[in-house]
Length: 279
Image 1 (tube, rainbow, N blue to C red):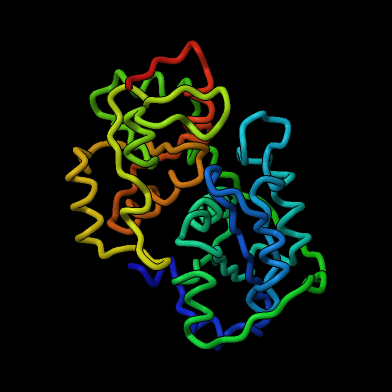
Image 2 (cartoon, helix red, strand yellow):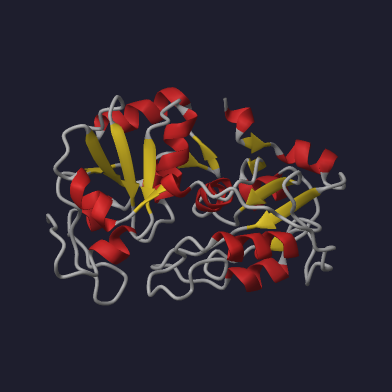
């Protein structure tokens, strides 16, 4: 199962110069630990990798961070990176699998078919003994990407309002326990502390280790220990729709297909005075 979603550093090193293969650094920093991931990419990246900015390939008219862009905006960005519908795309991040699952979800939502995440991320590449480079990467020859937008992959706040009263749906929150339980202020100014009523808490970083997911058995146990009924339709949420994708991909790895991502997540829900919350 994992081979359908990941490649090893050894595999990527062997195929790095294949025709129609594109490598993307999709790193974003957590709001509580700000960093300039573009600058870090300039300093060190896998040879030939481009930087894919999830805050720019987004709906920049929204006050919320990295909301899904329109199909037209995504298609232009993909084409400018040398990606067409037959391109093999390998993505990685600079951290502990914080942002790669969100990019995976975004690319899948717009119809990128041949897509894998680099196991272990940039650290895994370096630890395997492979070289990096610095500076800008030469611009690729633009291609034409035709989007196949899977609109149903995302839900909005109205869908979530209905979900909290539906016994067949569970909401699962990827934020830390302290944020979920309102024991610490939200890192975003003006956003309330707490969680969506009735939701369960599976902190995203409990599912990963050294840039890789834990075993399917461990993943299942973590969800069950949190009170998640894996037979139900699930909606995953987090602070801004980033680490919710860590949960979504983890659920996908254990064969759970009835799961959708709340794109606005707590940035939208906690930022509203009219939506219900629990401490």
